[in-house]
Image 1 (cartoon, helix red, strand yellow):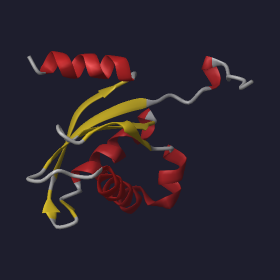
Image 2 (cartoon, one colour):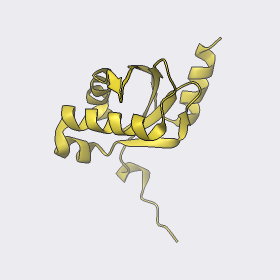
Image 3 (tube, one colour):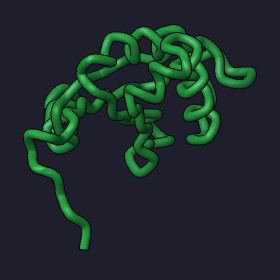
Length: 117
């Protein structure tokens, strides 16, 4: 049985939704490598490990090229900046566009679907 920590002791999370603009489809593994390398270059190894940034594999949509990652509110500006610095994945030129930042996945999906109308 897994013990849960009290809500006051848990680390806060923000979910960052981003879209990758490119001419060809992008694989999850290459996108993940580019995001990880960019965050490592911008924040350094210590900042990357203390920020506890996670890219959510189940929410990567290869057709629309949208993805989600989690980070603490303190690292949010650094994550946005490191995403903006990515201009190339492999031989493809890309643009990363941060769509929305939310506190939960459910509210993030709701806000994105409302924005498509």
